[in-house]
Image (cartoon, rainbow, N blue to C red):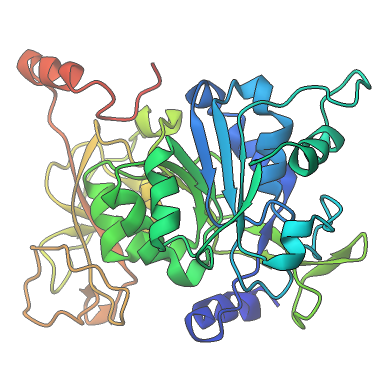
Length: 374
């Protein structure tokens, strides 16, 4: 069943079936690793109907705990399930009846109803009773619209689950405006030219949780394919989903322990790429200084202080990276081969040499070049 859901995501660019709602526990689990990054920051959730989104719910409930400066969330119009799927609030707000595309901006959340705690009741009261917290958008709320780009300019960090079918457009926009981000995407995005080049430049990395394990999302009632029911709601598992970010991630500053030695028998060379093959990242030899081809899942462990990324093999299709220069053939569609047998996509890497004192000084001057926790 998961395979069917993944295929639907692949075809979503045509069908626009991108309504996959992230569960609150998955958001909490990942964001718990970055709490200090949010202090006094403006957070934008620009693919999130506040009346539906657990991203909005999480940041609203933790507004004070994280020390946020402002929270902005925008709604897309038309959404086939706007204000009906997650039921976070009563959706009878007059503005919502008039037009679905709107934004919510919050700069302060207090215990408005005096019950001794800050919860969704306080947030709902704020939205209903404070002027200019909820306002209509002139556009349809598309994250690529001029109006939403103006909100993007104001933001410090973008946190959301963008439509998988528009991931390339979304990440290109975030990159254009040089914003910090923590977003969910399909692991196939690792092979997109736009994303892979960001990995090469250490402008993107995988997050802490769910890589190579998949995630469960709530889906609309009209979706026929799903994994199971939970409290009457349809839940779908998408095995190819993970977090992407340019915030500091500790594991990407930790060396992979290398304990194997190189032999030509264990590490054959490709027929058509000037590199040796390594089937599992843990099998990278500790005494080979040449170029090595490793599975693309290596990127989840990639430490830019330990390895240089040289490029990636082509595999055919629209998503193949055009970022390698070590092919021994001129056919861009050629997958790596050993004795004529095709090997799946490979990332080509080389061990970095020991830093000189001059290199260390340059790295130190660049601040967070390697995404190191300060």
